[in-house]
Length: 265
Ligand SMILES: C[S@@+](CC[C@H](N)C(=O)[O-])C[C@H]1O[C@@H](n2cnc3c(N)ncnc32)[C@H](O)[C@@H]1O
Image (cartoon, rainbow, N blue to C red; front, top):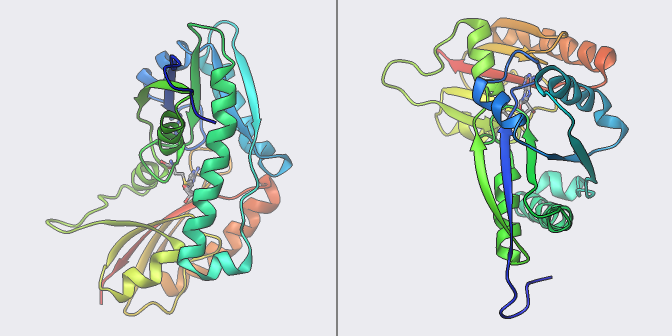
């Protein structure tokens, strides 16, 4: 749907707030102030699978928010995660684009229905600037033409920052590059000669057959009560990462992990 010719676009004040990777202690003072300026939080409802993540978000609000607030749950549209999509980069990009379009439509409906002057808030896991699509979806909403989101972004502590802090690491080596990528793309980057990589969005432990010798620094469910850390030569640590991932999933119902992989030979 787009606004008819000459129709005034509805301006909606939106705060996109980075809330850190799970713990109530990983929010900045600016993020807490932003949470307290929001009237209505718009939250993607991903069903039972994300119940524990939802509980963590609620704990953050209970801890930091003063005064009443409203939450609008938006059923998260289905995303195609079929075999063809997993195997083919173009199909993967198309599936993500379709999913973002469906999300934009759903969020637009909520924003368009808010009373005049309402401040809407999106709570973004970690930092909105890293592997998160909230800002892209708000751009799509703006492009659709019905509402004009006026967006303020508050950065958050990313899982990447917390991984580095927990291991006492400097992510880049002196004068060298750091590649931040997904587990899907890890092998391509390693083959292309990148040798200092942060890896997110893993569905498994990192593969041990990358070219060369690697060390790994790993963190699972960082910032939460279940946080686990492992580090050492990739060949030795990868099986322990697989076990730790399984243990986190069994105990908490979810696992999110981030790794630094560094080639030394
Ligand atoms: C969609 S990305 C979101 C990243 C987020 N915007 C950030 O700045 O951390 C999700 C990925 O971030 C990483 N991640 C998020 N929360 C994490 C946590 N508590 N512990 C470890 N890794 C986490 C994992 O790699 C996960 O697959």
